[in-house]
Image (cartoon, rainbow, N blue to C red; front, top):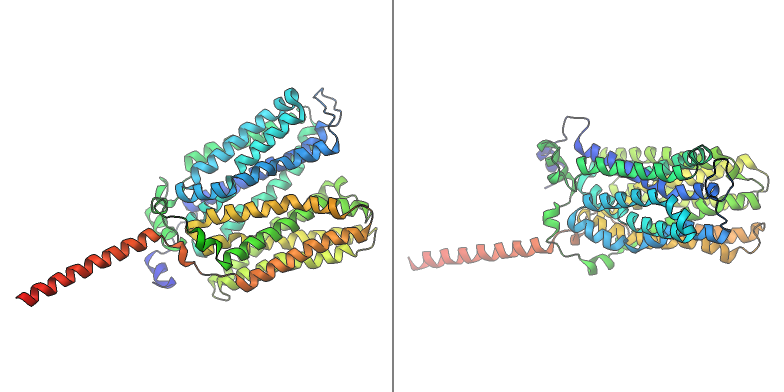
Length: 481
């Protein structure tokens, strides 16, 4: 059956807003809120260690303790990526994402009490638990997108959901500072985050569903349209499917996604965590003291990500470019664009504030194209195992997220030395360039053979054998007659 046949058999529903849009909007809110809770500590920790006028506790945490608290989230975050992918693929993402946000909300509510009674060790424990809980999030998101997004809408739906990470970062950078400086003090940062997570969990348990087939709110027309165009099986069928581990790990297109995810994580987190220090120590531009300048690159990334996604879907749906070509083009924009901008930034003379901010904004903004590059490609390869694939690549990628600041501490001995910082940038540039080159050479836009259930194949073989036996019996009977 061709694409046109599928569309004729399952036309797009007339209603502009369907249940798939409601689910995708809730997933967008989940990404926004979850990222806001990650960033909250980065802002609130300043208030927690600075005297205030409202008698809230002040903690004497040195730089080492603060860095430990900020990184402890990722200690837990990496652990459950692959198991979460397998569970989401087998049982659906609804329950997992609910548990993720529920635990995140509860932990945030307890952070002020933990800090007051157990100091930094208790807070560190809370961050690890929150990391464990959010380790369930991205694999579940990918599995749900695989079930709910028709191929023709996948780029913009995926971008809409994952761009919530940038929006959550922007909102929290602005809100947390205001809350910390107000009469409710730094504890209010965690209380607002916790209540927001719990509020989302209530909405999700009412309106969320792992698949169109398990949603009680969806129309028959929309369900048929999604199921005929998403390329994935219902969860009841997926439960019977053994995970094709050998095929996954020997798939070059999948390795292209792994390397792209690792290159993206190293490059992006180097930008996020180290560029402000470089601009301050080497260029003499203290961007941290200007909230607008700090948020500007991420505002650019948020806006451009939607422009990229709509353009990508337009190119595919109008048959201007193939899906595979679109993935490669936008991944190249997301990787080689920032690589070139980083190279320019590393040779920028000191004191050029405007040019430094322009280059940084371009670097981060172009990186928004990765949402319609490698990040959604798991679903292109295997809608049925998208959550498992995402668990693997996100786990590997976050190892490189942790490596980003470590590479700086190993390479840069003198923070005012431009030549030493260039070595750090060259590492990111190399990862950006080589990982995207591998992606261009070996990525595929076709659903892989191992996406289909082996159980169904064996059933088909059994049916064929039975049909053959029936034919043989009939021919024997006719021969006797």
